[in-house]
Image (tube, rainbow, N blue to C red; front, side, top):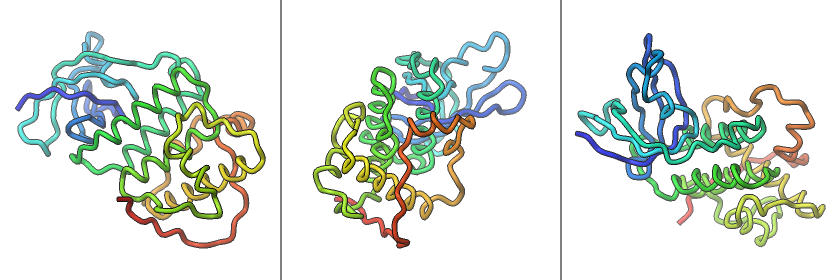
Length: 236
């Protein structure tokens, strides 16, 4: 079976001598794993299609929908050059891709998740990163994956909770003390959920050993909160 689908590269790994394996989140087929034969050779023609957070239309050959397919060609739509030139943006983009890979099942399409990842990468490309990017994306991905919380917790106001789920990422640049406290609480909600859900830590939590002042710009540290367990409830 040969088909074409739009996708975003979440992860890549060298395979054998000259091949690569990629994890791709596609618009119509969800998260799938694919092989790109011969791309590590000097004359490999499909290497650009295997780079992280590349968005392209892929031509795929697969004997079965659940067997490792092969990329036979494609056309690149976006490569996000501003993200690739900036270490902070690149760090965030890799983190979003890892969250998408870890929180989505194989072969279960969701155009909502695909559009969410494309939106955050686009805003990261053209907008200015702020500390709300990570918790806002995580909360929205939790909701799309069925782990969203029906109501705000930790005394976060409904208005702030709604903004974190609906506003453009680049507009979530908070300066008021109350908003910064609510943002820290949202970070704590995400941290508790990921600690409970994931079987091993995210690889991009402390990527590239960024200096402390750069990490502070990417994510606001959570405030101390009483110990307790959050029980995620599916959204409807």
